[in-house]
Image: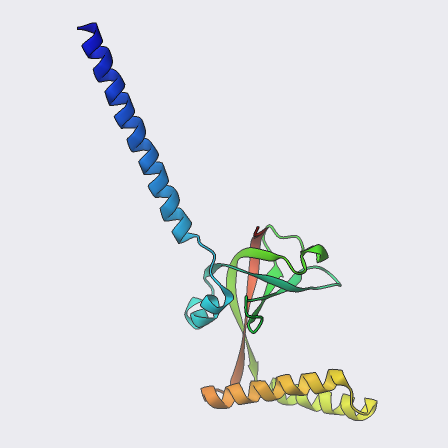
Length: 175
């Protein structure tokens, strides 16, 4: 009788522990899917609907602000899309050694609308600077940006240009 009770107890223990392992694995998988890092392209596809919401994504560090380290520019895997991340929350700053690394960032998606007036004023300043310096590569790249903004505004039929960025609250290096 003792053997029967002992065998039943062992069998029951094995069943319960297997069930607990399966529950933990299912929870881990569910959380993993829920918290899987998105690409910059995925963030940008739904950016308008997600302003003010928490996002989790990864990208390659293209630039770390040399003055304060409080800002990074991340590129997607194609190198065509970028997203600025501002250091907030637990992030005190970004180390320059991150340049070239892939990081996963959690933060709140924000937008900045550049008005037509702002763009016109910016263009006037660039032209004045260009005249004073007799041209220059810096001014040419700014004018290209301004023209691209105007083209986007025309295609989107808007009187402002949208710039999305993230107030980053935490990040980790992706290996």
